[in-house]
Image (cartoon, rainbow, N blue to C red; front, side, top):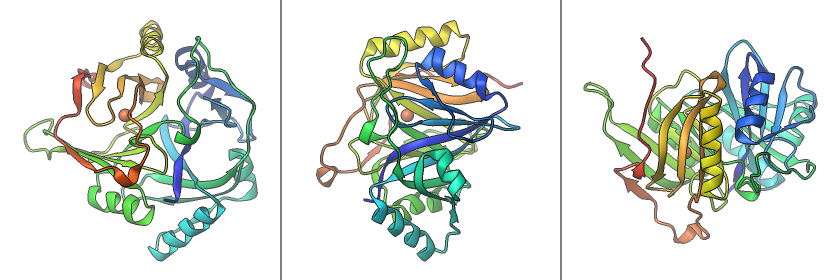
Amino acid sequence: MRVANLGYVILEMQDPAGWAKFAKNVLGFGVAKSLGEKGAKYLRMDNAPFRYMIRKGEADRFVAGGYQMASKKAYIDQIKAFEKAKIDVCHGDAKACKHRAVKAFASVTDPSGNVVEIFHGRAKGEPFKPGHGIKGFKTGKMGLGHMVLPAPNNEPTIKFYLKVMGFGVSDDLRLPAFAEGLPDQRVYFMHADNPRHHTLGLYNFPNPTGVVHLMAEVNTIDEVGDCMERVKKAGLHIFASLGRHANDEMVSFYFFAPGGIGIEVGYDGKQIKDWSKFKPTKSKIGDLWGHEYDFPVVE
Ligand SMILES: [Fe+2]
């Protein structure tokens, strides 16, 4: 498998400093020194140079996810796979590589319009300890966490990640439609070459922010609970109460970060040690308990 993990994400915010402040005060992330992207804030979760890049922009939205490739060879092979599939590849220039602390990166667009970056040769950062007494985020070789992206052009998008990028199938979750006349909801979960149950999920509806949610994992239920208290104190909207997912068994809650970005904070996510022995599942329930949804009504 060529994709090792989700190495970084890029968001665009009208107020990157405000987002950085939220990430520090609520999530326990750290603010890194700038890698040169003008106006951007770089956020840390571990000893990687950064995990979130918050660019200054006109909108509040998700820009791209950056996948760490297993090796330089895996990176080159992935570029060839894009070319073979007749997908336009945009190669990052030296300056943009410096802004990401990587030797090389390239970007493509998936069939639902999500921007995908791949990279290799990431510089090592300084040691980092999260705030609020959090022992550490579950990252390292498993990457920064997982993300669920909108994939309204569902089948071609799934095919792109499986066939062109070599992701493995974890779970195909089908849930009843929100309302009559709408198709059933589907979240297609995929894994990269690391034990995390899923690194990427694809949801079959569009999302105005460009991302359904980003997940950060901690080590204990108390760290999850403490974060929930900070979210409440900050006046941010919790859109799913504490619950345990059926497929990755993660105990988590969800809330809207500034800019309307969905964030999941959880612990106890399932890890698969040997993917060759794993049988992909087809789920009909999302949760074992909890995760009561509460979406604000837009009038
Ligand atoms: Fe999730």
